[in-house]
Structures are given as C-alpha cells and as structure tokens.
Length: 119
Image (cartoon, rainbow, N blue to C red):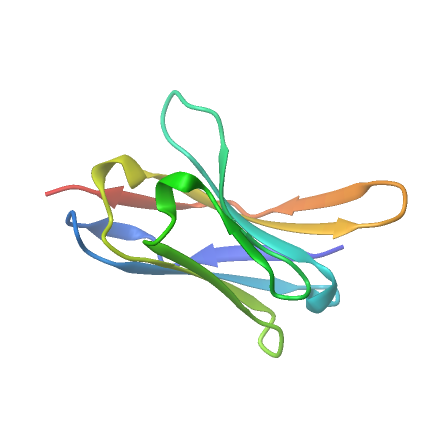
C-alpha cells in the first residue's frame, strides 16, 4: 500500500505557471503508474496526465503542450508542471498511484490540492 501527498497548488493569474508535486511513501514507487486528475465544481473527476512505470506519458487533449508530467523514482515523487494556465484549469488536483496486478488495479489517492487561475 502507498500513501500520496500533493503540494504546490495556489492562486495564479492566467498565463502563469505552477508546479505540483506528489510525494509517495509506503511502497516501491517505481512499480506504480502515477497520474494527476482534477475535479472542478459540478464536474466529474478527469484524467489530466499519467506516467507509466517505464516513463511513457499521456495527457488530456485540453492540457497537451501546456502541462508536463515527470517522475523521480529516487525521490518517490511525481510532478506536474503547468504552464500557460487558463481559468478553465481551476480545479482540485489529485494525485493517483495505481498498482496493476494480474487480477486487478489498485488505486490510491491523495487529499487534493486547489489550483485557482484567476486575475
């Protein structure tokens, strides 16, 4: 089992940047696919970006070219660099750790960090 804790959210003006961090503990970090999700008020939680155990990445179309996900296995941390932020990026951002076994996936979530993009 793994525990994840997000940090780095805040208030930023449109066009600005933020970097979110997610520190994991309690298990072997490199075995987990890591993802960032977000949930805006009144909307469903959606995938923002994901990075696999081998470093492959995928992004939501709405953030391609603006956001970059990366991981540092030595520090058991995953990052989300967010550039050119827009008001529609405002949401609570959640870190997800997924362990895939032969039978099922195991998902672990952080508490979330608020990102507000406003002038």
